[in-house]
Length: 128
Image (cartoon, rainbow, N blue to C red; front, side):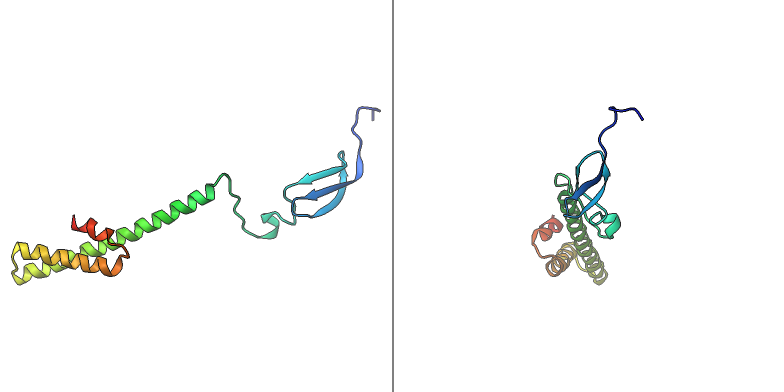
């Protein structure tokens, strides 16, 4: 081994993790600071942790919630339309006039929306 070209080796170098865990190892640095270690890394602890990078997780959760709300609205609207079709078919079978059939269908849709939907916005969407 050539003299003077190798860094100094410290057999008692101190490693300090952000979680507070410390241990001794050999290194060319006297003290080493690290963000994760085997005591806090999710792979070793079995803990599932989401690391939020610039609000990505919050944005994803907000989009997921909006998608679920839209799906629920579509489902309510579909049920209202089905109820309107069924009521209209029954009215036609009884021989009601076209104007009366339309009124019955609209009333059936409004009733379903009123019972299933917490807001009146869906009622306006079906009425159009």
